[in-house]
Length: 184
Image (cartoon, rainbow, N blue to C red):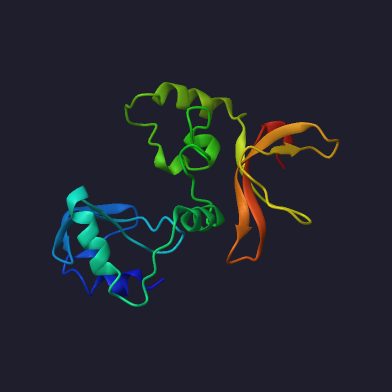
C-alpha cells in the first residue's frame, strides 16, 4: 500500500501521474535505468521495475536498504493476485481460456485488427462459453489448480485454475472455469 511513498525515495520519474496499467519506458530508480510500470499485480497500487540483467543485483541491494521492504516469493504474489481476481497466464488465461472466458474482455478491443480477433468475436457472439468464477471453499481444505469442480450430483463440471488460503480474507478461496449450463 505504501509503494508510491517508498518509490519517491529512489526516483524523480513522474510516476505519480501514471495511470493503472501504464509504463515509463525510461526511468532512473536508485541510479539504475529501468522500465517502470504501474500494474500492482498483488491487487494493491504498485510498481514493477524492469532492469537489465547486469543491473538487477544493484537495484535489489539498493531497494533492500529500506527497512520496511522485505523480499517475498511468487507464492505471495500469487495468493494476493487471485484474491483480487487478477488472471495469470497458464492458470486463468491460456490457449484454451480466452480473455472473454476469464472475465477480462475490457483488455480486448474487438473493433481493432489483431491475430485471433475473429475467433474471439465468434466466441463473444455465441454468448455460451465457459466462464471463470470465484468461489469460497466450504469446510476445511485448500483448493489447488487442476482440482475438479463438482456439481451437486457429483458430476465433474469444471476445474480450479487458482486457489489457496486468502491471507486478507482468512479463508480458502479460488477461481474455477465452469461451463455455461452451470452458471447462475
